[in-house]
Length: 82
Image (cartoon, rainbow, N blue to C red; front, side, top):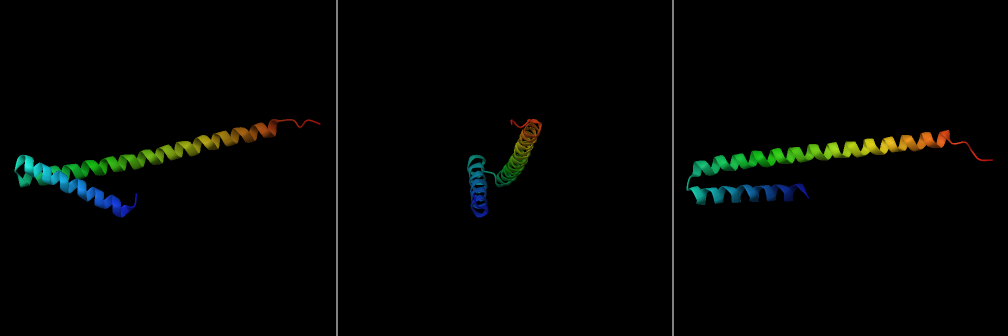
């Protein structure tokens, strides 16, 4: 997803949240507070997802590195058949 699409989608979610809260509760102050809370929650989830992807990527790289070292040691230990 492109960054501009992400920003537009995030803005749409926040605006629709503000509108829904304002219509439901008829309070501009509560609409602003709830929209800020929604914004913080979305940012925390995004940050957590990025951390998870980094952790997953590093664990995959670590796993392939170990398998590669194991295969190399196996090749070195083999005795050539004559």
